[in-house]
Image (tube, rainbow, N blue to C red):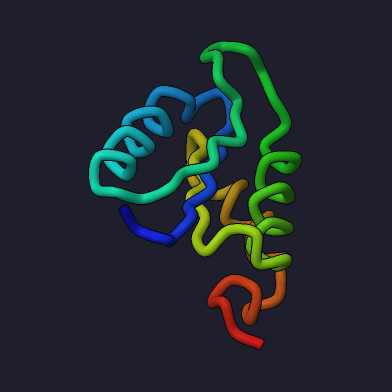
Length: 91
């Protein structure tokens, strides 16, 4: 098992893909923290989930993060609001 912790989050359009990615990561030996959402079709605010992942990485509680949304645009914009050093694990 890897010591790497990967946190995952999605919007309501990415729940099923997130679940498949998480299964693959766990099978490969990674530790995963699934921040939700857990139910498809229930509308959520992607910014809340992107902020959770960004904060966990910035605080070094997770090593990597995966964000999934319907277009990929909203999550990437929200994630890019965090300092680059936090995204790359730097100082």
